[in-house]
Image (cartoon, one colour):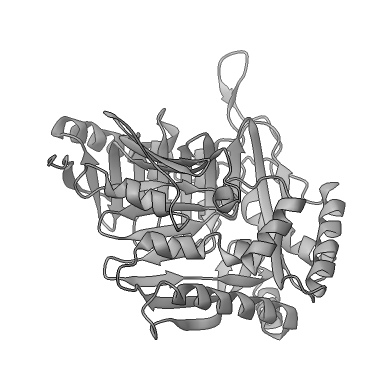
Length: 454
């Protein structure tokens, strides 16, 4: 039996801004990396010591000594679970993403999951940082990089922004798609579907600076910044798909029902009250909570699934949502990956029932990629934390864009659903920082117009 490989660890004092420091670490990195922020900690991971990739329905584990393939199993993440069980590392943690197309039938040929065991990590919690690396020399270098990044981290975000038109020609097509979906729903084949639209971002953006600036202007459930597996994303997720703790506590957090949030106390309070009175929004939310509880009951101990904080209002950047928390206890002989398999894709980014909703999305939208997928971290002890990829800026295959959707039910109005996408897009569009360009004298300069005041 092979002895598991060990990492070395060192805890050091830390007193700087975690988000700004992580953005500085990412900006200085030329390797694949992930920043993942939870309420209790922020983690930065770099390098690919091992990878777990899913493409064309096959899961491939890649280690320095070679590759092993795992065919599709009974659940969506079954191959991932088996690949991770074969990792030769003690106390491993993986970071990565799963795209919306993971659940396509037939399986998507492109990469739909990319997870990594990083070569080095920094986990910031409170007034200390835990450094993790292969050896003591690497820890010394990592400590210096952390110190340098904390010193480089900007006190104030850049002022220059890229201005986007959120009411372009694509809005006509979006209203038409919503109207068609309403007719389909009223025909009885499904109850709800989330349709989205995209906005291209012109020019190059500074993704770490955009992440830092957007994080300071948002109040997400999770935030992330990554360059991994041909994708670059900065996001401010409003909700989690799933969280599983080592002792078997399971949580999902469906958000459905939206109104604008613009900082005006009177108007924001009025919109909050309107959320509770709007029959369409309440119905949409109740549908989502019911299905979330139903899905959870298939992987949780009978009698343990319950709803907490039903229809509380959560503020998320430029919008406020009706939110509920569905809790349960993991059933015996069930893993966190079984939980994610039944909850993915998230109800609030697909529809009800999921299969006909996903079929409709496939007919009217191009491939979503990471939009409405998940960015996640998972540990060898059974921990899983999976954020829903919304309120994000995406860079892939030479294109940079934003994407937002709205939940369509029988009572929907196309104009209102379009406006909801605009309200959500503002959570990101206000914070796009252009990349620095060099003038003839070699000095960096920002050349795009400031974002207009909203």
